[in-house]
Amino acid sequence: MEFEKNILCIGAGYVGGPTLAMIAYKCPQYKVTVVDINPERIARWNSDNLPIYEPGLDEIVKAVRGRNLFFSTDIERGIREADIIFVSVNTPTKTFGAGAGMAADLQYWEKTARQIRQYAESPKIIVEKSTLPVKTAHAMERMLQATNNHVHFEVLSNPEFLAEGTAIRDLEYPDRVLIGSRETPSGLKARQELVEIYANWVPRERIITSNLWSSELSKLVANAFLAQRISSINSITSLCEKTDADITEVARAVGTDSRIGDKFLNASVGFGGSCFKKDILNLVYICRYYGLEEVADYWEGVVKINDYQKERFVLNMLTAMFNTLAGKRICIFGFAFKANTGDTRESPAIFVCKRLLEERAELVISDPKALENAREDLQEAQGKISYVEDPYEAVAGCDAIAVLTEWDIYRQLDFKKIYGSMDKPCFIFDGRNILDHRGLFEIGFNVFPIGKPPLTHLK
Ligand code: UDX
Ligand code: UDX
Image (tube, rainbow, N blue to C red; front, side, top):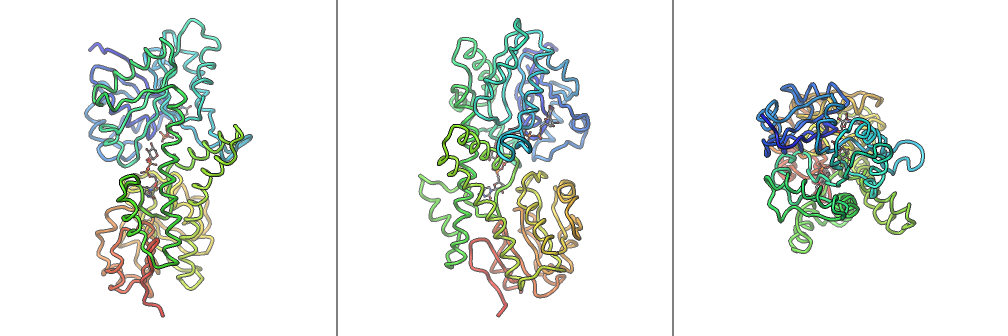
C-alpha cells in the first residue's frame, strides 16, 4: 500500500511509543515508524510484552503494528524516508558541570540533531516532543543548518501533555494539542501540516497554535502549575495535622470554587514522576539565567515543599512508632509514582524506602506493576528488603503498612484478615488517603492519614 506520509519518531519511551501508536491508529493513511537506540526496547515493542504498562496500549499496538506502525532500530533508514520526524528522546536533569541538578541535559537531543543532519537528503519537519528549555528549537535549527545547506529543516514545538496511567485516553481526547512554529511562510506551512495530522481525530478548536517559544515555555509552565497545586495542598496537610482540620474537607471546600476547581488537590506523600521536578528545576534554571531570582525562588518553593512532605511522612512514622523503627517490619503498599503505571521515576516511594532503611527498618515491598523497577531503584540501598507482589503475603508479620501509591486494589483488601496476620500494635500510614480510616481504626489499627487527625488506640 502507498502511504500519504512517512512519519518517524526517534525515542520509543513513555511519550514516543504511545503517542505514535495513537497517530498510527487514527491515521491509517500514514506510515509511522518508531526508532530507538536501545535494541531491547525495540524488541519488546515488537513482542507481546510491551516495555511500558499503560491501560489500553496493548490493544492499540496490536491493532496497528505491522499495518502502519513499525518499531525498528534502523535510525538511518528511518530518517532518510521520513517527511516528519518527532523527537522524543529523554532530557534528564544534568548531573554534571554547569547547571548540574537543575538544567536539562541536552546531549541526546544534540546527538539526535546530528544524526538527522547526517542522513537527511530531503526537506524535513522536525517536531520537538520532548519537554525542553525555551529556545531549544533555535539551537536545534542552528545545529541542523550547520553543514547541510541544501536540505531545509523546519523545527516545530509540539509538547505532549499526556499523563501516565491515562495516556491512551489523554491522547485520544486531549484537552488541547499545542503546536508552536516560526511565524515565517515556511514555519506556518509546516505548522499547518502538523495541524492536519491531529485534525484526523482532534476537534480543530482544540488544536492551539502559537509561536515556538510560547509553546516550549507553556509545557514547562503547565507542569509547574500542576505541581504547584499539589505542593499547595500538601503544605496545608501539616497545618491540618496540628489543628484537627481535615484536608479532604478543606480541599472540597476550596475546590468547589469554580475559579479554583477540584482537580489535583489530592493530598499525598508527595508528587513523583519523570516530569514535575525536572521541568520545574528547568524553569528555575532559566529564570536564574536571566537574573530573575525572585521568580526562580518562587517556583523552587514547589520542589522544596515536595521534599519536605516526603521527609515529614517518614518522621511521622518514626514518631508514631515510639521513635524507633530499627528492626521493625514495614510493608510498603505501592512503589509506582502513581496508580496504573509500573513507572517509578522520582517516585516518593524511593525516598521513603531509603529513609526507612536508614532508620534500620526492614521492608517488604508490594506493587502490582512496579516491582521490577523497585528492585533496580533500591539495588544499592543497604538493609533488608523483600519484594512480594501479593499484598496478603507481603503484610504477614509486619508492624506497619505504608500506602505510597493509590492503587485501587488496596481499597478492596480484607483488612480484618490483614490485621490478623500482622504484629501488634498495628499501624497504617495512608500516604494517599485512599483507605476507610474509621473502619480500619475499628478493626484495631492505629491509623495515620495525611492531613487528618490520627485515629489511635494508644494511650
Ligand atoms: C522523554 C523525556 O523524559 C521527556 O522530557 C520528554 O517530554 C519526552 O521524552 P519519556 O518518553 O518518558 O520522556 O522518556 P524515556 O521513556 O526515557 O524514553 C526516551 C527514549 O529515547 C529511550 O527509549 C531511549 O533509549 C531513547 N533514546 C535516547 C534514543 O533513541 N536516542 C538517544 O540518543 C537517546
Ligand atoms: C504529568 C502531567 O500531568 C502531564 O500533563 C505531563 O505531560 C507529564 O507530567 P504524570 O507525571 O504522568 O503527568 O502524572 P500526574 O497525574 O500529573 O501525577 C504526577 C504526580 O503527582 C504523581 O506522583 C501523583 O500521584 C501526584 N499527584 C497528582 C498528587 O499527589 N495529587 C494530585 O492531586 C494529583
